[in-house]
Length: 418
Ligand code: ACO
Image (cartoon, rainbow, N blue to C red; front, side, top):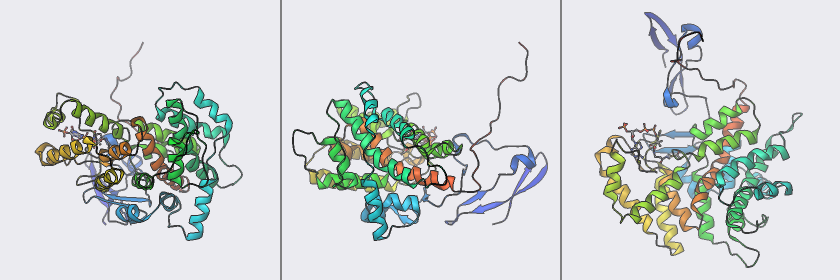
């Protein structure tokens, strides 16, 4: 690929180009300010590549998502979440021995330090579990500090992946006033989480295989999504060489927002509102198009996907299957499908290439699985953790990585006196 030419103030500059392994073209502007004195302005970073990465590939125009080269459809169909964690973090599929060893590690680091349990007691029962999750992940740094003297960070990676579900389940138990349930090493990753969420000491709890498999699928579909808002936040914080836990806690906070992972909770609230309002879909489609209203169809639209979100397609099919298998009839699923149908035929949505995203159908599944609405974004965070870790690790191992420090175009007052 030839260099790009830039003419600025009558002077021509040559800018090197870079082509990714899937043919994506970038203009390398790393020397732009040094040679021209100018910077670029790209609000929301829609045109800015912040790093080179070999973890996840997305082609938003074609609806393609691949983890380390493997299509999401195949990964979702054939893999277990723990192996997907390994794939994302270490770059290749684990051998049988590696898979077994990794699984063993993830199973044997699930306990929280007993002193951490006291933290949960201090929260009001109304606390949003995302605020607890972020604080508790940050607190892990006090109990399991970053390795020193050349020790491997792998142990802390394992601790984080193992303990996150314990933290999440404890925060739920706290919110409903039930005793915390300790991890059980005989169970799978998803099964152990379900047991900590839903079992009580007073009675036997059977893990429903349909629910366990659905959770496995949901975690896999959320596992990584290249340089989205929370992942960029993780990289931003990690670029200052902040520790693993601090960087992940920041990712949780970024994910919480309703324009990002928090949308899954908002989707259900929106569908409930439409149902309570007599199921008048048209009214809400009109409202979403009305520029005088700040209402948006939650779970619609994506910065990168401009055709379809492959994760939403997988989840749509899964929602039908799981609800049937569980014998659940949820009127919200029908409302969601009708809303999708209307929106997909409406020129407003078609012209803007607004399609259902991953959050549109995930809430329906969580609901059928008995996961409370406040926990939806926590579920997303558990799923996204391996992606954040992989991206953090890739950055920390890159000898050319620099602290993230964008510039700005200052538009304030020029110098004045008091
Ligand atoms: N409902 C109605 N209109 C929408 C929607 C929506 N959900 N999303 C975008 N639009 C419109 C915008 O008003 C804008 O219209 P205009 O060109 O007439 O001004 C146009 O589509 C482009 O939208 P932007 O906000 O500029 O797109 P951006 O890429 O910045 O935002 C986002 C993407 C945040 C996902 C947006 O589509 C949105 O708010 N969706 C709803 C929230 C949501 O579902 N978030 C989850 C995303 S997936 C994830 O993070 C896991």
